[in-house]
Length: 150
Image (cartoon, rainbow, N blue to C red; front, side, top):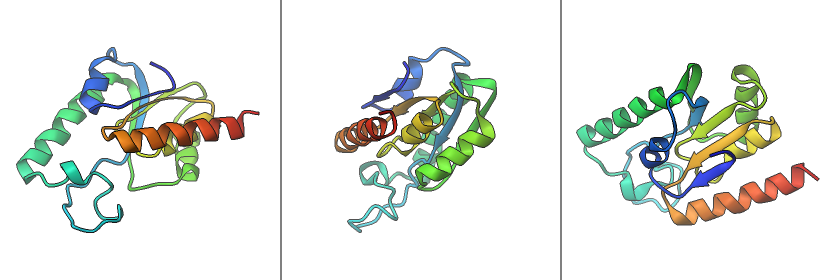
């Protein structure tokens, strides 16, 4: 399960991981802000699952955090940021991780965390629920890899 993105719910992906598998997590979870806007700025691109009750939203995040703490090594790191750039991911990797670290993004989006891992010689694992974003992520990562590993 290295340098791979799964088109599935992150709980399903993490269920395939052994305990203490990851060196860390870099992610930006959905914000549960339902909006009719067509851009992704306010709803983080997850509009279909972005209209939960407060209780449903917190239950979902708690179940994810329980899995995060199971799959991250005892000395691992879990980092939460808003939408971020590859430069920021690279800076976080420089600060918190060694080369060859295994880093998971449970909301992979368009592949920013994966690109940062590639440039910093780390291993990435990701989950992306939505097929069209998953497909875009695979294209972005392949293009970035080819451009940076010639």
